Length: 411
Image (cartoon, rainbow, N blue to C red):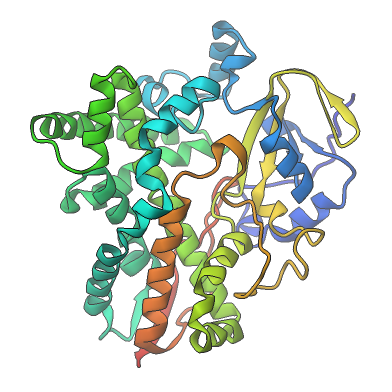
């Protein structure tokens, strides 16, 4: 099998950041999967192909199942993932990047606090927090929706679930963003140093917080995880890695989809009015926000055995790139896929993944969004763009506006 090398793809370009969907459309029109040599990956862009790969029994996220330690070390050196002791220890290994029995054991330790019932108990607390935020902004005629509002909610709420003091949540966002940025395809030494330094600072913070909670347990996830570690169900490194992952996952992607969701409502004012007229559509509207602009548009899998996909055979160890952002705009799955429709049903999007790695925090993220958008539409008679030049973040693995300036008038 000779990989095609004619793919014109610049995921770090301004053009791709502003509108990746023409590229995705062209990619879906190609036969089978498409080789992207710069990333050493076969790209899957159609909904059915992406769904098959992420649910395939012979696919994993970690190379541990297919390569020797020496081979993995060589690959890390080649991709500049080496010489990052804390990042390697707590970030490169995690619940997200584990498989099989290890993944099942780690997920079991935290799953119980992310069920719909448990998340639903947070509604009043989230509503009160959002109300206080909006109270402090309501008299301003113009705000940056991202920095002034969206950025303050997800990390604060997930911090409360874990047991982080409210005053520490802003710092957690900084650490999280500086750590996660290294998972995209730009792996310069400067970005590498930033990721490692912030991982180290985050680690020492969690050590202190863990010690405090061990001495004075609370009704939070940290206390629950301490019990699991004492019972031998978590190692110390797994404790730190899992706490980091939950805090990082609770920040960036939800902030991004809040921003892109608001931007979609502003670009489709008829749909915003429809939500005002039919507030009962908010749950389907939130799902449509995740479909329309998937905040985590790219993930990967490795094949543990030879597999057949799209009529071709791929050897053991093949890396596949699954483009959720493209799959969720596939017109064969979603009629009129490029239209934002707050009442879209059915809407079996794949923004949360599928199978064993289905997003643990999806219920909490959707509740945050439901409360924020319901509150804003109730309290403000008009909401409109104050700056139409909305710039989106560069990269293959993220999707969200850098800023979103809006003006509003109270109801």
